[in-house]
Length: 233
Ligand SMILES: Cc1cc2nc3c(=O)[nH]c(=O)nc-3n(C[C@H](O)[C@H](O)[C@H](O)COP(=O)(O)OP(=O)(O)OC[C@H]3O[C@@H](n4cnc5c(N)ncnc54)[C@H](O)[C@@H]3O)c2cc1C
Image (cartoon, rainbow, N blue to C red):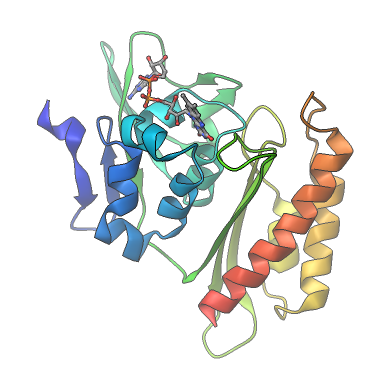
C-alpha cells in the first residue's frame, strides 16, 4: 500500500509519517528538519545508524518501550495516531495512545497506519537525554517546546514531556504552569525544576533509583528549557 510510505506535509501544514517510513528517512527529510526539528533530534538519539536505517517511526511508537525516545517526543508534539483494522479507522491522541509498558491503543488485529503531527506553533525546542552509554535506551528523556509571546520575555505556551519516568510518557501541568507566562529567567526555571522533582513518580529499576531519575529529570529540564528559550529569542 503506497500510502503507508507517505512522508510529507498536507495542505493544513500537518506532517504525515506512514507506517513504512524508516527513522533515518524521517530524520533526513528537509521539511521535517525545518518544521519539526525536535523529531529528527530525538530520532538521532535512537541506538545507532544501523538501527535507524531499519526501524520505522510507527514501529517504534507501536512497540511502546517507556525508555524509548519517540513516545515523549510524540507527546510533546501533540501527535495523532491513525489506527486501522477490521472495525474501521480511528484517530487517537498521544495521551490516549500509550497505555502502559509495551502496550498501546493498537489492538492485536489493528495497524498503526500513520502518525500525524500538527503544524509547528513555536520556535523554541530542545531534546535532552541521559543514557549510560551513547546509543543506549534512555534513563530519562525531556522534550521541550516553548512559544514566546511577541516582543516580551514571557512564554506563551510550554509543552514538556518526559520518558523513562514511569510506564507511559508524561506531561506535568505543574512544570508547564511554572514556565508559562513567567519571565523566562532563573526563577521560572527553578520553579519548574522544583515542580518536576515533586510531581514526577518514576520507577526504581536496575538502571537507576527513582530519586536519581527525579533529580536527573530536573537537571535536564533546566538545560532543555534554557536551550529552547535561546532558540525562540
Ligand atoms: C541494538 C538495538 C538498539 C536499539 N536502541 C534503541 C534506542 O536507543 N531507542 C529506541 O527507541 N529504540 C531502540 N531500538 C529499537 C529500534 O529503534 C526499533 O525502532 C524498534 O524495535 C521498532 O522496530 P521496527 O520499526 O522495525 O518494528 P518491528 O521490530 O517490526 O516491530 C516491533 C513490534 O511493533 C509492532 N509493529 C511495528 N509496526 C507497527 C505498526 N505500524 N502498527 C502496529 N504494530 C506495529 C510489530 O508487530 C512488533 O510487535 C534498538 C534496537 C536494537 C536492535
